[in-house]
Length: 61
Image 1 (cartoon, rainbow, N blue to C red):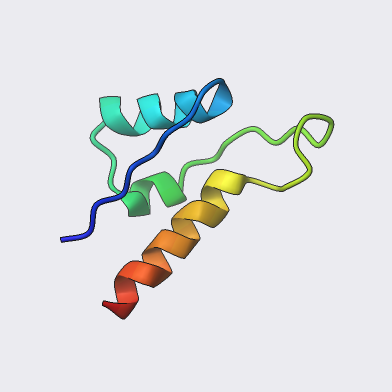
Image 2: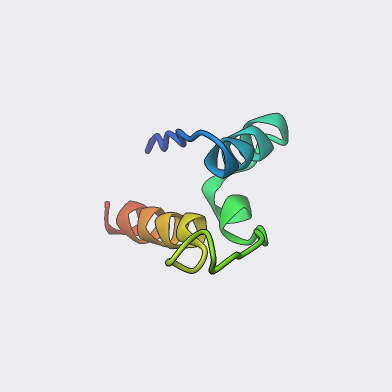
């Protein structure tokens, strides 16, 4: 069984809270739409990229 830990403060904390409170798995979190603000973050949807990486890594094992 793979374990994925989401840590964060600020907007990252919201993602962790969303996942924990709703009992979401990595696939549900991957499909969740988050707000994107290019003035605050250079990367587009970092959480989505992290979930994609986790799903690919879990598929290899």
